Image (cartoon, rainbow, N blue to C red; front, side, top):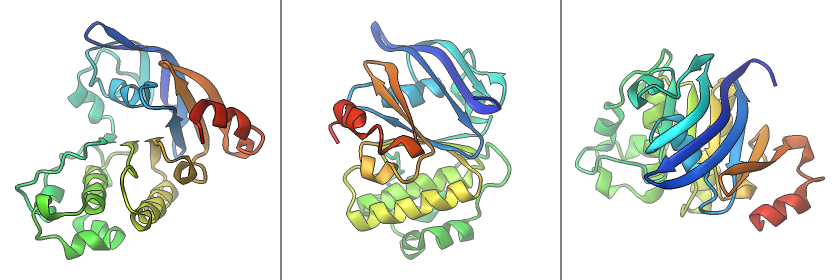
Length: 234
């Protein structure tokens, strides 16, 4: 693969003495959506945290638009245009929905305005004066995604965004992700819900025991379904 916007090669990562990633290699072109699939504990979340420098130690190579980042601190990595939506969402509970939207720093040009966010997430407009603690789980997830879209990030790292949400909210998030992909954003999706991820992604990377054990293109899903079932239990 050529012209990769994000290129990860030989990535190892540790939490303390625990060696979690054992030589991760993958690439993502601009405008692509790829998934990191695998069972719990396989190393999917650690992979995106390692890209951002949020692990104890990492070695290997992580290039963002040709810039080597493995020795850079997290704040400098983010300013290359990365936005992270963590599984725990990180909503400021004492602030209103709209106050949460006003917080993100700018990491790139073209961040969405508050009005554009409200057009994409009508629920947030309705709840704009509500405290973070009063938002439903689905509304908190929408808000967590909306914040990184305000920042101007061009590479979105989304961690288990559908976990525990009602089907109607999952459908809404699917529509939003399609719209973001149409806008040319590059997306890495860690997802347990394979039925949600399958129609969205250009390519799937299957992680097991801290290594990528399979790569499945979108047009190979049918032919490789048995292999995916073996790795994922789907």
